[in-house]
Image 1 (cartoon, rainbow, N blue to C red):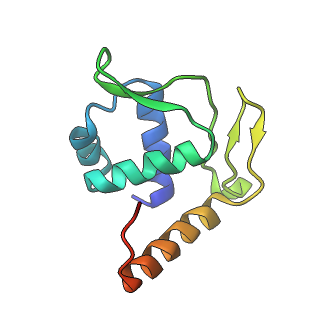
Image 2: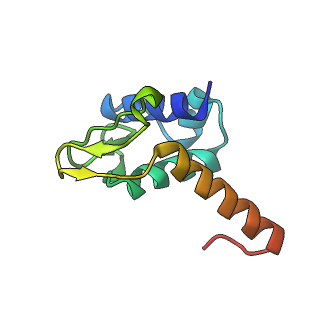
Length: 112
């Protein structure tokens, strides 16, 4: 499963309120729990208001949002509720995070 597919699956699980806790979600996406939180942080960077709901036992969106993870359309991310449009490519954003993480790791900088 590509990273883009994992984000699409994460988005759909959150919309359906079917993620389970972070450990269960990590298994569903075949990633680590840390990666789950990194992916959620990335969605938050794009304007998603995400919280864990004890009532649903799932991560949920607190306001309606639309994401498009279609690489044929540039992989752009758009929030229809907030009328927020990101002008940079989704792949580019993921690549920037990966490179920053690798640089920080090589320099011994801990994530804050």
